[in-house]
Image 1: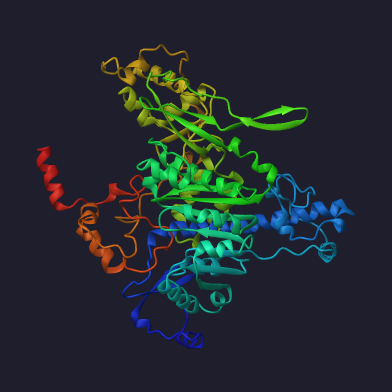
Image 2: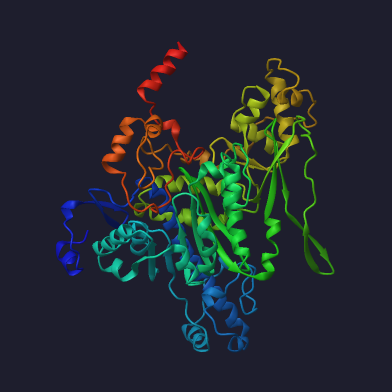
Length: 606
């Protein structure tokens, strides 16, 4: 904490007795007794994950730069004729730089450069600038806690620009910058500005752009994808989970250009809808995205994507998008890609995808399909990045206040099958058939013994990702029901129709070695409970407490919130959505019911 002397030197004119000091990581912020600027402590998970990604990005960026220099050194005489530019910004994901010269095919795996310092200086003297430290833009900063943590905890950052369009928030942010001492004052600057206008007027200037709005980020995406430097990273949060999880499908389509579907996989579909929307905005400016990490945590989704410029690679976007067909009777779903490729005379062309992917009626239960999407169906994580982040987090666990939670999430993400969109719910399959559920180990073993891959998912402890087609899944369940009979059901129900068919595949339920992941075998925690009751989104800044909030949270929770967590001010702090907005994403199972409602329920049960 800055001492009184430093406080006077910095010119601050406030009485510490009017404030509460909140410490998170290496940063400290002053919260007024009236709590004039919104702060939510549950977002520590979000901030810690962002810091882990940012540290990995800086490391990967350096490796890519060194790999490019090594490649160009070997090229010899080609370097002097190359167009002068920033080598750190010229690396492209497809193996070419902006000037057309060849670089390593996968720069993210770049080798450590062993070039003598003199040769590097010679290259730099011939129009090659050295790699500049990254600049970070926090578009919606409020108290500035996130910007301060970036500046004080992440080595190698030269500048963090914090924006907000609320005067009270900017004043609080500037006060907190001074309170955090000389390092924060030299690296962090706060501006009163509309984030959209600021990003549009500073194109390609920031290596990192952090979007963490209250609710939907859709209005910021167009300007955000333009302000990220080539090869930079965009970090984006969406907290409007009710919209993304199909409670308001038409609203989702108007905001993100995709129609969501109801299903156990709705939170992963929310991630993929957000990625598809960012890709759509990037494509308008001859840019495309490469996701490095996409997670659903607490009551929101958070994606981290690299942004590159290449008019030729933008043409491949239809190959990364798919429509989803969801059977209304059973748990079957099928994907149909928007585009396909055709090779002819050593050239590759993109054409419309073949369809329809499904018949008019489900081949398993005979019901109709709902169609949703388009969603991002390419990988949503870079597993090498995830491994690097997990190693970094474990090696610096004392630097992460939310170490237990983010390490658990990264561990689970590292086990996911990267090329399988969406997932099945074993309990949903059994609910369709009205049968007892096999253990996850038994079901996984049957899928593995049938010759297919299967894994868990970080989104749902009961979710299972597999490349086995739905007819194989239902054959496995038919074999299970044969040994565990169910009561007779009406013949028109989906489960009865499925069980009426004889299985083509004879399932083998013998335990497979790979049925347990390494984390499970080592008993590493992967899904942790919430750290406290009523953990989740707080009331939007300026919103009055109503009887609806009382019925959802209970009077005790609201009293605690009004005493020391809620207040007026900026509505931008770190992406917190209100309870009624986050239907599928909030944690209502941990909420205590009011006494009147509890009494009524007990009377009906008796």
